[in-house]
Length: 295
Image (tube, rainbow, N blue to C red):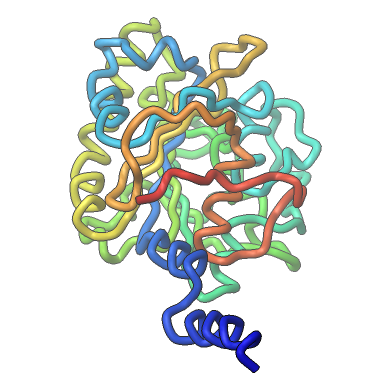
C-alpha cells in the first residue's frame, strides 16, 4: 500500500490547489486585450527611431519581440491571417465585399461562442457595420477615403451563416469607450491611412503615427497596467522586404518586460490569444502560442 501513497497525494494536490500549468494559464488571462495594427514599416525603421519615441518607450516598458514577422505581402492577407489563422487564399488588396462572408473559424466568433466578447474599431469608417469598400469619397457622403476595408478583417465574416459575426462587432473608432472596463474582452483598433504610418514621407508618417498612438491609446495602456489588461502593438508587414521583419510589443502587468528573440508571426500571436481564453484553434494546429513571456 505504501507504494501508492505518493500518487494519491499528487492527485489530491491537483484537485485542491490546481496543477501549476492550470494556475499559470488562469493568472495570465487578461480582462481586456486591445490590439493596434500599424502599417508597412520594418523593425529597424521603428525601433531606435527618435520619431517613434512613444513606441520605443513601450518597447522598454513591455516585451519587445526581436524576431517578429508578417506572414506575407501585401496588407490584406496579413490582417486576415492574424484574425483567422489563414489568409483564406487572399493574395492582394482587392475589395472582398462580393466574395464574403466567409464561413471559416475566426477569433471573434470563437470568443463570443465561449462567453467572451469581441469588437473591431476602425478610424474614419463612415458608419457602424459598414460592409462596402471605399472606392471614393462621393460613394459615402459622410465618409473619408482614409478608411480602408482591407485593414478591417472581421467585416469579411459579418452576417455569415457559419462562424458569422454581427454588425455590432464592426464599429467606428468613436464607439471606443472612455470607460475601459466596458471594452470587449478582445478588441482591435485600426487607425486610418494617415495615422497608421501608411501615407506620406517616412519621417513624417512615423512621427504622426507615433503621436496618434500616444494620444489615442496612452490612457488605455496606463489603465491596463493597473487593471489586469493587455496592450499589443504589431504591424501588418514591413516595407516589402523579403524578411518581412516587423515590431511587435506586449505591454501589461502580466508581461515580463525585456527583449525576446523568439521567432513569431501573426499566426503565433493569434494562437497566444486563443490559448489565454481556452478557445478552439483557427488555422493549422501546428502553429504554437508564444510562451515564456508571462510573470
